[in-house]
Image (cartoon, rainbow, N blue to C red; front, side, top):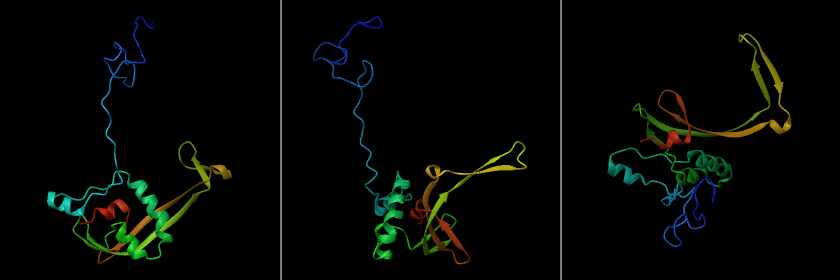
Length: 160
C-alpha cells in the first residue's frame, strides 16, 4: 500500500490478467504511431490533390545530409536531381527562377559581444576553444531574370 491506495503495479493496477500494463501511473495508453520522415512525398500525388508539395518534416536533418554529401558527389547535377532540387521553377510571387549556384558556407563563431546598458557600447570576449561553435549553411542561388535570389533547401523544394 502506498499513497492511500493498494494495487498491483506490475500488471497495470488491475486484477491479474485483466488489464495490460500501460505507461504512467495506472494508465493504459494507445500505441503511438511511428513517424517516418524518410518517405518522401511524391510530386504527382500533390499535383493530383491540387495543393503544393509538402516539405519534409525534418528538413534540417535532410539539409544537413545534403551539406555532407554534395561536396563529395562525383556528379553534382545528378546529386541535385536525387535531392529533387528544381533547376527551374516558379516562386510564390510568380517569378520564373533558374538555378545558378549551390553555396555551402562554413561558419565558426569565435567571439561574443554583450551590449552595455543603454546599448551605446558593448563588451567583446573571444571564446575559449571548447566554446567555439561551427556550422555549415546551404544556399541555393537562383536567377529571376533581373537579380539573384538566395533560397534555402525548404524554399527551393516549394518551387512549382
